[in-house]
Image (cartoon, rainbow, N blue to C red):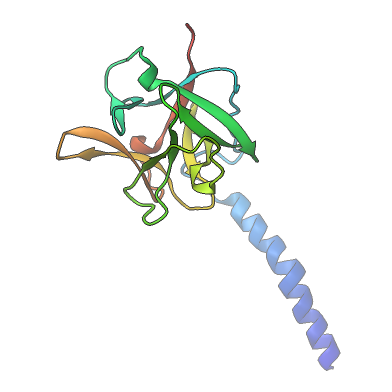
Length: 180
């Protein structure tokens, strides 16, 4: 009797419940994208340069990362990508030897730029995951944080940061290839 009850419980626990749970998840609606569109990771050509754009402007480097509201054709707004693994890339500011990275002490509302020539820290690796209509979330590896922008009230600049996922245009980006 105990063996039969144990067998039934094991069946429910490991087979029936996960299948039912998976079916229920597949019927839910997703705010970010329809389920009939699989997630797509943006793949970069490492020999090319890219702009990183948000609906509010282009990401540029001016002693810190910020959005430039005007289209700027200088090297401070160009980035090189190097694939690490599983769709994650390091991102180098083309005009410098600096790489974009996230401060380990505080992932929220923080950034830092790393000057190491071989960035291997996972907090310096990012994946562009398709959300909708050619716009992507930029995910920080091994965290639940994504890229975002906010207003820095001390200098009125729109600055780069990371934060938890909320719906908003400040968290959607696209990379556009630079053509000289």
